[in-house]
Image (cartoon, rainbow over all chains, first blue to last red; front, side, top):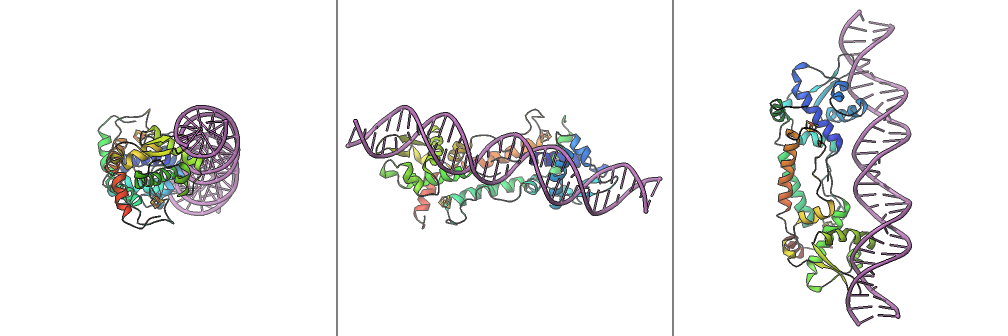
Length: 135
Length: 135
DNA sequence: GCTATTATAGACACACATTATCTATAATAG
DNA sequence: CTATTATAGATAATGTGTGTCTATAATAGC
Ligand code: SF4
Ligand code: SF4
């Protein structure tokens, strides 16, 4: 039950894009330079964020990535689900009792977990990060 | 970010052991009979529950598994952590900033998630399951 | 138009954890 | 002593995540 390494790359990138939002587009090579990840691999991850509508991409010279219009609304949940997809934590009971109490209980806890992540906005986190020594 | 199939086997088994607790020990072959899993593989999973102190095993004829003494206190969290271990959902920042706001936020949400699972007792779930058609 | 730059997509390989089987051993009841 | 049952080790199969390489498409600047 762990978040993938790709999600870490995505979150780190979102933080950088938010902190440098005023400077326009940023190329994947610059974004990858801040992390130990190849440009092509990070690009695949960022394409997921594009398709989820969290960031915008522009190909060609001086192109790159930038945040979407109302970027201040993007939450941790948005980024995590864009990368990880939407499968529930516990889903091994398809052909079994759908009213199973175990299933219901775990999904209830998961729902609260996701809702809490949905209240945490990247913009707020970035604002906090601006005030502490960072790498 | 999914719970393993093994955890499902473990939870299902705990439900059965709780519902048939008055009948003494139950062999792994009977427990496996209720699910699509081999006896040797389920045995490995149940050994984790034994080492975590959630159930008790007795080898030899008429042996098997039964719940521990104060079995009414066992929660979903106990079972999940016994099988899955204790690694945090998000732990890719060992050699980075330990005060990272992303890390802190996700771990805070995870903490609440685990605490909620820690309030859900298997005994209560079994009591509910007793009153509905089950397989 | 031409060229350099940059994102995107597909094929492919690699590493790793999960799942599962088989076999051997230890312990217990009768 | 024998049948039964849990435990442990070795090993294989499977699937997913991670990563690389190459080719293609789109854009800016000249
Ligand atoms: S009882 Fe619940 S957890 Fe067990 S197999 Fe049925 S649906 Fe799944
Ligand atoms: S900023 Fe936070 S999430 Fe990103 S690498 Fe550092 S510790 Fe990890």
